[in-house]
Image 1 (tube, chains in turn brown, cyan):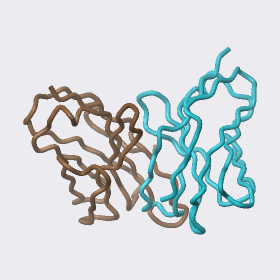
Image 2: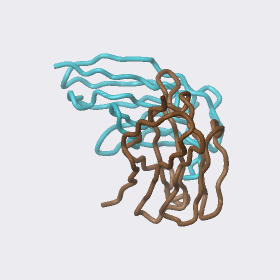
Image 3: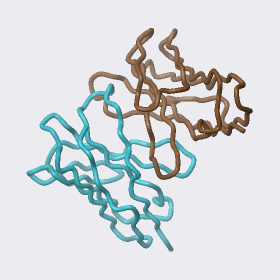
Image 4: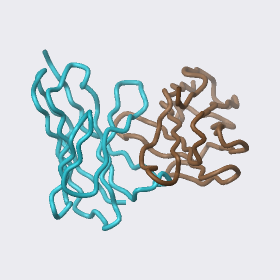
Length: 114
Length: 111
């Protein structure tokens, strides 16, 4: 089944404790991105990647890191989480070419930083 | 990226047709109009995309007038399971596009 998976789905952590949220897609998509969703603010893009080893900042990259060492994986790293990073996070992927307007979203990771 | 404006919320009843209009006055020549659906605590899901006139798939229809400054998502005979937030996005037709989600339209379907 074609899908985007994220782990963990739920995470409660404390300020300053480094964490990684994994994202994996099995559709051989070139394009992957991370969004965060907060009440009243909609979804905002954090980082995106057009291919392996190619990443760029989205609208709200501060406090986050990403890497794209393999085509299928795009982990989101919070080196020193803070309470303002409490949010619902979504990973998405897309073919990047052709009929590429459809982005596939993962199920989401609800992160709470205390 | 063109800014979009949608109603904050809409109410409907099962079996009715629902039309959600999106305004995008500054749409560019290369921009397409795309609609996504999001259920609570789930990722958005692509519904439909169009450039002009009318597009129809198994889920919805999208009507785009000649000036392309607005578009209307039409959901035929809605059911309770269509209760969700619907987002209208405008941008170039490439998977590399940054999707800019507004606050969307919250549709509530009642029995």
